[in-house]
Length: 176
Image (cartoon, rainbow, N blue to C red; front, side):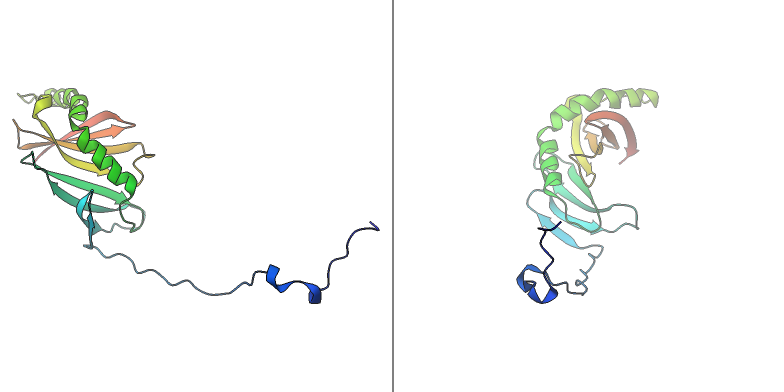
């Protein structure tokens, strides 16, 4: 290698091309406290609840629906103590708009569960009202979410439907 450039001595190195490395510590952000309130135009007023390490914390709130006697509960799980994401707000808006279509998907599954429990009534699509939206931290990529319904004819029962990849899979029935 007779024609290769020899490395420049340290005295000839251009100081502008070398990024200085500064040792230091970034300031630590204060952790969000339980009970902190967040106002969102799409999600309403939400309250933060911190969970133990390894479990997602969540924001919980309630919207009064103008056309229903039942309030809509919203739960947005988050990583760490982040605010609810725009993807969660978009999903809440979509579920509110498509609640009739979701009720059509859920009514047969709810009625099947009522028969299994040997209860003497059924619910119709027109009876079901959306009352709960429970979203994971990344609702557009996570496979599971929950929607809750109440029926006008049996208002003492709450139906929570678990969706996996957009398909209702199971129903939990609770006394409200």
